[in-house]
Amino acid sequence: MNISQQLVAAGFNKVAQSLPFRMERMRSNGIECDEASLLTTIERDEFRSIKCRMRLAKVTTFAELEEHGRLVTLLASFTTESRTWLMKLPLLRLQIMMDAVEASW
Image 1 (tube, rainbow, N blue to C red):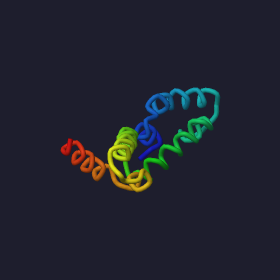
Image 2 (image 1 turned 90 degrees about the vertical axis):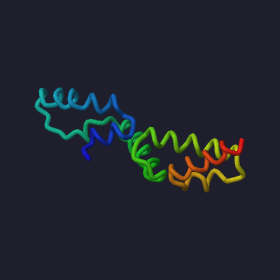
Image 3 (image 1 turned 90 degrees about the horizontal axis):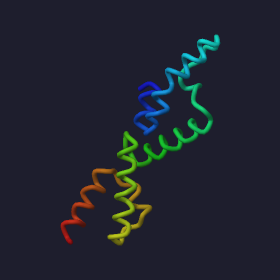
């Protein structure tokens, strides 16, 4: 997966869209570089942080990461399970648990 695809998966759509323009600007000034080197320090740090969180939650997109976090928060408040334990569970398991909680209402 190239850097643009990774950025889109991590929710950095605007950054991914701007990479070709950044690359063109650098090349027009005679500077050869790759896409990864075009990220600002802040973008690079945020990207690494989100990629790490996605890896820990075992999800592949930023939307799944947000859903994972939402379900952890809801299940922690509606059940006696600890947030730490819930964060280790895969998204599918959290969805099944939330369905069971909702069915008991």
